[in-house]
Amino acid sequence: MPLDEMQTIGVLGGMSSESTRTYYRRIDRRINDALGGHSAGDIVIRSVNFAAIEQCIRDQAWDSAASILVDAALDLEAAGVDFVVMATNTMHRVAPQLVEALSVPFLHIVDVAADAIRAAGIETVGVLGTDAVMSGAFYHDRFASHGIETVVPDPSAREDVDRIIFDELTAGEIRPDSRARYLDVINGLVEAGAQGIVLGCTEIELLVEQSDCPDTPLFDTTALHVERAVDRSLAAVVD
Image 1 (tube, one colour):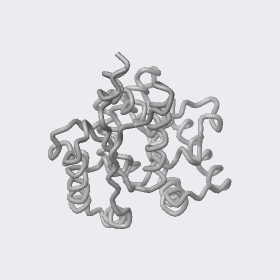
Image 2: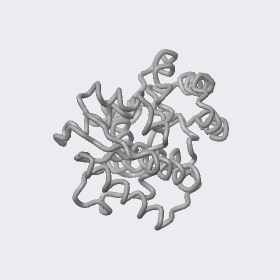
Image 3: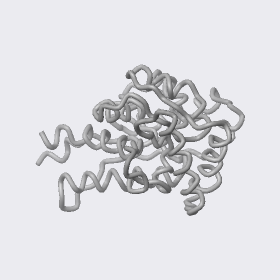
Image 4: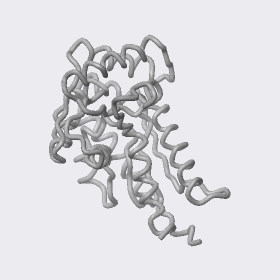
């Protein structure tokens, strides 16, 4: 088996450590499931200081964030990765700058999610994530380019969803009352016409899972992104 043909995955992480850890573990698990034995991912992780990124988000200093992440992505390229995934939804706000700077492919998380949504025959989805994701045209426009309409919570619900992400989930804190609030928000999105829900923050899967919403498809962007990255890494190995 030509294991040396496995492509090296570059993970641009640190936003937060919970998200990066999830990517690392899931990539290894899926590759081991595919190949067995002691097989694990061929991965390079470049983790940035989340405090700096979080401040950029709060200040809407997207050019500064882009500069930090472009430098980190170029570190991955210099380390010899074959392609890059960024372990965060929010910072795909600066994905165009990363694509422009990199010579290796960049796998966009929205494109991967959109493929799964279209395959499910769904045309309208509700979006949960940070306020930057729920309010930002960059996320919704990307879905629209795939023919998918998006709906978001009302301002009060957006505030709660964002607060729970930054104050709790990024620190690995899981609270039952926060889960109940998220489920209320999801029900509101379904009432507003959503046929499925995009978990548009890599930490949300720590709080809400499909069994919590048996009648509404959840699209876990982390899981979908990892699946696509592993498929690409193993393309030459399993053919």
